[in-house]
Length: 109
View: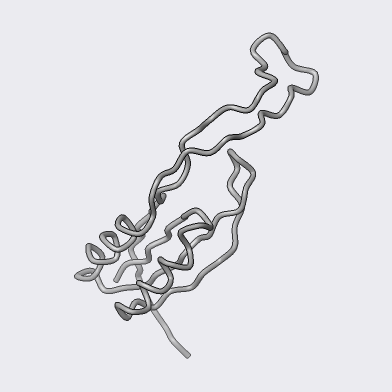
């Protein structure tokens, strides 16, 4: 058994949740915040048998896309301002960050 932890953008979370449940994956959805952009994202916790891991990864990959987003950089506080860019910059965000962990035991009460 494996535990899949997938961090996805909020824009992809509803569609991903729907498709995972349609394929009978047990999934828990958690609201989370990213450290880089300080914006909301969603973390999915999925428990599944080893043979279904590839299917879960396929569904995540097909339903979580990368996109460009404009961000306003935070000004440096007491640091070197030489490299500070005072205007918004476009960065690529999205897709999914996925961790797959082995499960030693599973109990459901």
